[in-house]
Length: 468
Ligand SMILES: Cc1ncc(COP(=O)(O)O)c(C=O)c1O
Image (cartoon, rainbow, N blue to C red; front, side, top):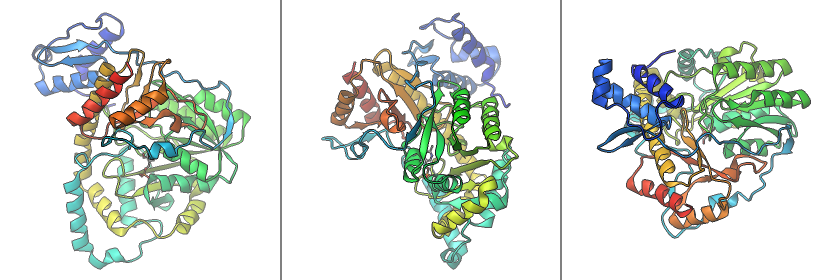
């Protein structure tokens, strides 16, 4: 695995903090000292400290330096999930209209939409490329494209996936209207009404909504702190029930930001193979890692065809680019029929634009700065939450993606909390939207894919102060 230059000193500091040699409040060596000691550049040391801050281990005090952090308990993500797998109807126990129709006196500062703002997306790059495409392709963009998508685009997606050891075949690849349509097609290709699917718990509302619309039943599988999906629990669920599909986001799960390790990915795959269950792998955040290299996919370990994988460019380019893809493995024939029945394919102008961006090096260049910006935003959000929310708040440090999962102290009156957020004009995504079992009422999700303006910073400060 690729290592960063800064790991030479960050691993040493991390070790000392974790084994208690460096206590909270301990002043760490200055940037200049470390630069001399490790014979490296100032920016390498600064990146290293940013990485440690992101892990929640270190804090920076302006004009003073870096200190071992003294933050609220981050590890408590314990959730009240029954230890026995339970099959349930895909029905939300809360009225979710409330979360989409909140009235407020003040203009909203929203942290609830998993989309980057206009400043974070590479607007100029996308618009310029789109104009080039229109100029050069002309009327060709007005014709029907193949229902499964442009062959050129598929080839480009296949080439990119090879760089993270994921082998996709042109005949199994379908271009879709975003990731959610890919999920719909994948589920409909393996399940009939009333079938059982295993889902992560917590799981993002939009994914649950597709499951609900297809009238499936679910078994919620806990996502546990740090390591992610509880594969033992999954195994238990598959042993005692006829599970048709497992829907997972192993790379930077939404909302916890957890990255499932390769060993866990392989274990998950072996459970699926043992019980002959399709895996539907959501890789929408896979390119958005904050350190190390692009993580592997479950698909990269599979040669059975039981794993379907999908993604889109909504999170890495712009949400308005409605272009995703699905590699349907051994379910391709059925998936193609469903794709065809949903009408014509994605607008050719989007297909050609994305193809150009991916086949040159502009997408990768954009990703490098975008990831760094997201990692900084994540740190800012963690820092603000740690400082302004009450003791006992748990904060899951994301390894990538867009979201932080926050658990409020036991005694918090959440109804009151959301009422006060309304009055302040700040919006988070309530935890109860992340399961059908109302497991996460004490939690909320905060999205950090927006630039932190003074107004956004103030909004988090106020939300935390009101409940102290
Ligand atoms: C895990 C996950 N899957 C799918 C989607 C939706 O993706 P798309 O806009 O490409 O349909 C989202 C967006 O919030 C998401 O977080």
